[in-house]
Image 1 (cartoon, one colour):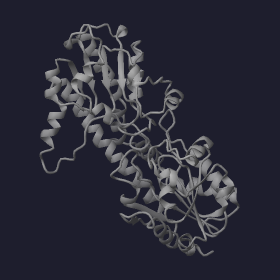
Image 2 (tube, helix red, strand yellow):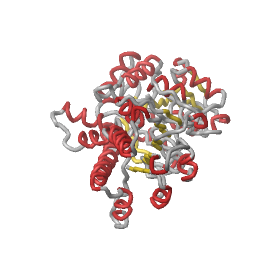
Image 3 (spheres, one colour):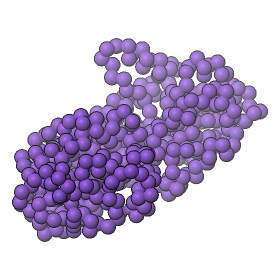
Image 4 (cartoon, rainbow, N blue to C red):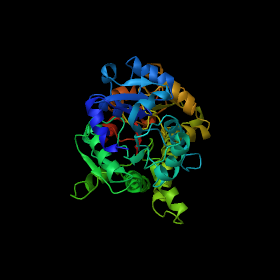
Length: 442
């Protein structure tokens, strides 16, 4: 098999590239590659495929570009037989016990195997612990295809680094880690990715190393944020402002600039569990990573408890209070609600028989209802509140003045009885103090 001709075939138009999985990661990759080569975009979600065909990008990752892309969107897996370079970018969530849920990647492997042709290269981008690509995915593809890896087809791994909602660090200007099962596949995979990655590629020596890069980089961020969250808890007990402490700390040249917050999403809140799971299988129990996860997973309840405490101190009966939550997505200016920790705030309030009203124009109401049982209310239809929790830093919330925030509260409340919980420290301390409202921020 001549695997070293795939790049040239793609450039000349005689070969096609395929994406398996067209979510927040796969779809931007497909659209970018389609500017240069022929691309088949496959997803099992027919609704999503039809939206893309009609120029609708529910992920908001490529926007208007979806209308003009040359990607051949399809829900027919047989179309994968036309491709000689296949990229798999399906989600890798965790189960209820935080163990890796490999069902999506196993299902994708079966689909690829059933439609694999000799001479193809398959590259996984899904975040997994070291060993999954070669020990789990390869045997499935071999069994389904009847083709031998390393002889009839080859495998590689290139961890995705898409940052949903980020318009600065985009696919083309983030350096891409690439790897292959041998020198030939590694060279060809690098050449293919170099077509679209302007920042350049970073080859590593083997697939396990590339898999480790992804889970380690996100575990590092998770641990740093966990430290900041612990500092926020300590500052709260000391009755000093965390934001001011961090502003002072960040005047030093070697401060890292991390901030406290709710750590959700499909990467930082998930990937550390993939790394610690792999370590457990080798007999090592994480001392730091899992404790960082424990801190970060507790922050939703911490915020809810702070809100309840502030309501009690304001003389309210929390069970009878009207509580508004602004924001449900896991991060600002992005429609992605996967693993949103705002849900932890909601669940904690519900434990106290408080049923908060939630508004988020960025989130899909159908997804919020299906995934979390949350009924999103249009912002303009929200009832007047006793307590407002601004949970996500969407630009619309960030731009609100103190007067606009006050208008969200019941008019009969005195300013000192209006409870504002500013989770992301969106508002200036001097303005909060001048407002006369009772406020708390993480």
